[in-house]
Length: 280
Length: 291
Picture 1 (cartoon, one colour):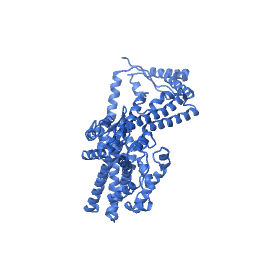
Picture 2: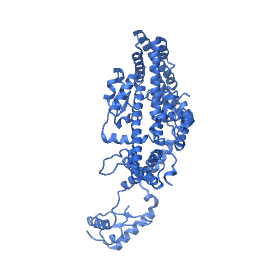
Picture 3: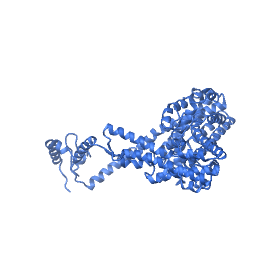
Picture 4: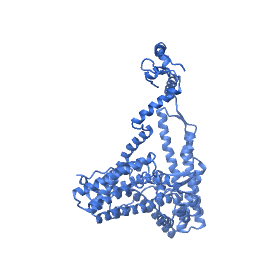
């Protein structure tokens, strides 16, 4: 519905009927002149006013903001665990230092949460569409803050614990993958060992995708991210018929899936209480 | 183009205003209003109309998931039992005669499962239910549960109470039996470790465990494995696995467990354990855990 001001009508370049009861009805006699003048006026207005925002972009930013809150809740569970680890490693830390460390962690959580939400809603313009490893972002930030406020030995101890956790997670994931394969293929103990070794030797994070959900192609279970070369040489012919690897299809898609897989580990983790020692 | 005088424009405005008043609502009502009215009426009529579901048509896709093809489901099921037989052969070195007995038992187990499924299919043959009706909704729920049971039945053919299990127990000599028992125990432990690994991943993160703490907690969980049905567990992907681990934690000596971690960690761990206890009834009802 268009409402055209009286001065336009008075100029006699078109006929605009403004009906009663707040209704404005147009009897169209379009003229290029009217259009041109209206466009000129709009251009002058646009120069003075701030640029109009794309409603879709405004909506996207709102969605990002909302979703970031969800990720922040999840990542906070990780942060509190890591703060606990630092406290166990470092013992007593001066009040100002621990507050600074906790704040650095909270800031890292906020940033990682926004990156994750942006990834969900189209990413950042002109940047690679990935949120990287949100957990690593938080740990790195805590380690830097530890160096600054407590000392390098404590930071090194913390980093070592995080690296060991990462390593045991890798070994555990491989074990879980082989356990699922075992359920499907009835592996012998020897085969399980061989496949485990093979997966560990060629490990990449995309392998963890095979534990996400249950996928089938026809009547064969599919294991996304598992390289056939690691599995097939250790299977019998009958087992090979029932194993369908699905190797990485594209870097971007896999990279995003990996991010969600990494975050899935935080699902159903009860929200721990905030340790006041860090924030007092 | 000639310019109009303002009074002429004003007259046009008045005429238009008058027209609105005279023609009233009818003029303001557009075609789309009719469409909206009709859509609302249709929706209301649809809500009253029966929503028929022919259960017979749904049966194959739901009983024989994922393909919905009976023949493929039978082959898949038999294939799994034959793989078990191959594993047995590798561990024990079966004779031709033993192999034949095993294979026959496997085929009979599959045939028995299909007979059971057929009995259920006959019950639903020609049945149509109305989802708008509470009785129809109840029947639909029963049907869904039955479909899940049938899926599990196919996946579990060859389990502990199967003919194949009995035949294996009967035909093996002492050496073979011991080798197979060892192989089976290793498999059970391996499956249990998969559950512990999946469950500990979250506890590790939330409690901020050190490597030593993790190792100690993992070890006491491995010492007391729960009796689980890995097939049922994996039917739901990895969804229930962490809860099985949390339930297992609740069954450990709590003093021993708490001695491994500090008070703050104990507080967080209790939340995990409470979740595990809360899920226990469901896990038992789903026959994922047996104790």
